[in-house]
Length: 423
Image (cartoon, rainbow, N blue to C red):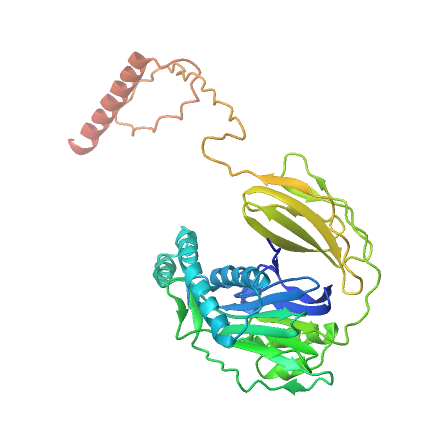
């Protein structure tokens, strides 16, 4: 089962690069300004998987008008990369399109169940909650672009629905045109219907003369020409510029350098993680030169990763339920990645209502008593004086005394009423 490497939709990933097999990947993920200010997930999604022989990657753009478009984007991106990573390289376009269409249809019921189970917060305003319920009926949708590069066949296979862009460049940075490629902004994949507005688009092509493949979302807009040549710093500067615009959109980019791959420094040291007692968490000492860490997880029928920024006290908390084998890797823009650490088993058991994690202490109620108060005669025609507050009683209720006090108060009020209104 291949490990699908994914970028976190809940945070922003600055421009980074890493060596995978024979190629150098450069990628960037930035949420829109509105999503950043609201602390919301991005609608775009990036995933990839590769080794010395092949590389598979996917970019997905969730449809914001659908029910949580980020949900469909992540689901579809992971599925596409895992499928392509193990797919024998297609022999022709039509067989590739047919196999892809069958998979897109096969994944639809699973996605529909995922959408149906996705919670909607109970504290939302009624109108917003009703709108989300209506959107859920229509399903979650996403556009996608996925590519399989086969180094032995010296070819690549691409498939897409929507307006995510695939661009090819030669060794001089000049763009190679794809006249056979057709982009239809109406096309997308739906958790309710599967493929919408036609069959997916596919492309098979030789890698002859191709130095780079670049895939990016429509968030780059008219500044997409800046991607012909770039550095990590220029990519970050471009992202900052685009996100400062009033109508900023999510930005996602993945570039694959096939030629002119720069030489990186020696591999980083391997992290040595240890378990945190009584918590589903790992900790490890910082690795010199590391820019970020990657936790590789396998279990519960899944194999996936989580990337974490390098901090003074690096740690990882398992948020999904289940038992997983975990390994940690250190990465850097300027060094080869470290080896994977020794495996550790990490479990996050679901808490059910029958499980009590802390015994609540019983509340001890003290008996309530009433302090005896001597009754004072009521002199007419003076106005009635409100009774003084009775201190907190310290003995059991004396019901006879309370009855007598109540009767005396009622009699006093009757006398006052008679003197005021009947005279």
